[in-house]
Image 1 (tube, rainbow, N blue to C red):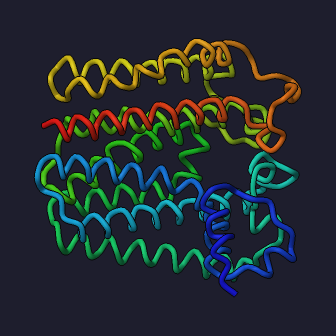
Image 2 (cartoon, rainbow, N blue to C red):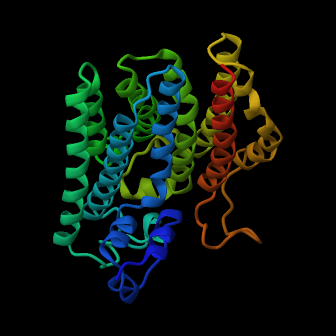
Length: 330
């Protein structure tokens, strides 16, 4: 039986489910939960930003964009499924590891057999490949190169990139030049460095969230042999790195306005400036040893990542509003 309400729940969060709840769900709901569909919104937003820049340049084509955004979202879903499979097979997600504490892990929780899992993965990857192939047929040039770069990160993000401190730089490249810049290229047929710089402002948001998450579970990752960039840098430098990346978002907005690449509406992000002092105060000290009073228990043990996510949501809303207003004023 189709449960549209569960679809909405899966798109909004990563719920914990019992075996009976899982068995009662329809295949679409199971797929949405298995591939962690709640995080696909950032991929949609990245492609939408690239599309907005194409529309701004007078080269927007709806069919090309729909194929692009769906292809990116199915590629991201493929990466999430591969991430869970690889970490489960390597023993990373066993013994109540962080991944199991904040959402369903269909393999570790015994909700899905490996055969069923590979069925979902095959369909997801197949749709992404078909959409990518169609886009290549419609737009030559760099499209194939961008697709191959994306496939590389899908296949190798979990291992070896994440294990050797390259996961965080990969996210910056994927959510920035690859997703935003790539969406623009498919629609416009040429590369834009203004769009590239704009994409980095956007991509710093999810990068700070990932950096925060890997800082939250730094000791657990180190014990498991997962050498993320925070494991390599250490806890203190990692906290400072997040502060630097957040500050860079505001600085880059100033630079793009000062150089005339974009207009004053991009400075709407500074309406969020009053939230930076308390945010930086959080990142200035180590994570609490126990859940603070009043802190949402469903969020703990995530701490730095939750703070970074809140800022990213606030900043990105103002950032996108600024880009939209600037485009309308042209």
